[in-house]
Image (cartoon, rainbow, N blue to C red; front, side, top):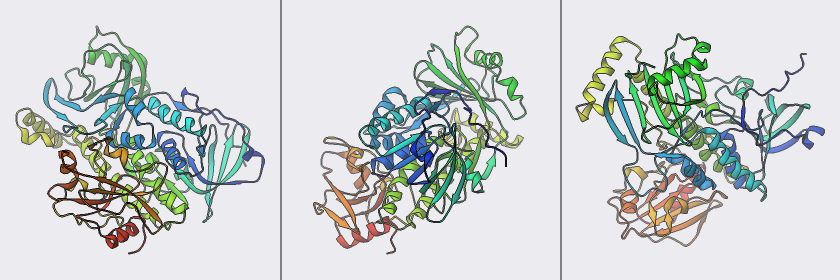
Length: 547
């Protein structure tokens, strides 16, 4: 039998946050941990933070010692920012990021149209921020490590590479390699957040189905002083000729992200030479503009997912479960919604308040989200990179019409940007019983934010340190506290008088409403008035019990 390959760093570290250290587990019989997460990236760390706040002991195993270089994911949408806010670290992320709501689309040197992703007021967070992934990860990790000092039950082990996984039915066994050699760890539950290549998925022989698109994009992060506004600019057939399409985003610290579509049959090694990257950048921004090349990479994108997101005691989240093209910023944003959906369900199962069948709803709801993302991502890719001459003729005709006619603009697709998923059709939903209620807050929907007397509504909904459901009563009477099936409901009583935004987003034409809100701030059910029996049944449904 061959000896394991030596553990080596496969990328350059931006932050060495959890350096390797020998632990007692390496010197004794296999220790059973309640939850082991494989992967210390943004999804794994956010999930560990969420579970840790709920009192779940979590061990994170990562094959590096911290956060890698390169901006990678940069666009973080409003809903994931709200999730981070619930976990206690949304504000520093937004304060560092570049806030933007406006985007513009160009065809050659003509502006086709512009769009505003958050045209309405009354939200704590913007539609999007741009922030290099290393910064994003560092803020979440800093918050987690500060809480560790206060007793957060989360441990992260760097340079602990998982080499084998075996599901034993009631637990999972992991073989782990370190600089000091191998050891074995056991887990009641294993969650793979180990990226699109997911070694855990490969070890279990699980498939990853979908399409790999035959095109290549060069990313260049450049530091420069520029007069471009803080907007998303996308060019079809740009006049610079530096690529078949171009995308420009501003990041913090005078760094700009530029994407160049460079085609499928390219010499990647040649394209990544600094002089060739600099040539493309200069071709776009002007030969006389001084800039520093910070980072560059080439990617080929895929739209794929697993058939199921959990297999026995092994659960998958983030890119390990699904992958889409970068157009629409649906990768990391979708992964954070996976963690938001999973943490409270796993906690209830571990506490014996819900059966393992509740995980079926994680599969349904997040596969529903993945399908939505893949559909939007595939359509954007087909529009950006036409697969036939007739497709190109159609695309160019749409772009030409959109410059002059409003009706054509919805057909222009430079990437439908990430929005939160509504879980229509989920078994956890109770049929809508609020006549005249707004469609945007129907059962399955994420709760939209609204200004309230002491801040914002979402800061009053959901408790990161527990799995309580919420009863939101608007101009309706409900009990001061309520418990059913072992699930406690916090009560929030509001009036819509003088708050037109609350009325528009939650009442519509109804005179009053009672909402049952899940721990992840999604609507489980809603009614026009309090009905104890209906609420009791809705709670049973929302935790996966048969009703």
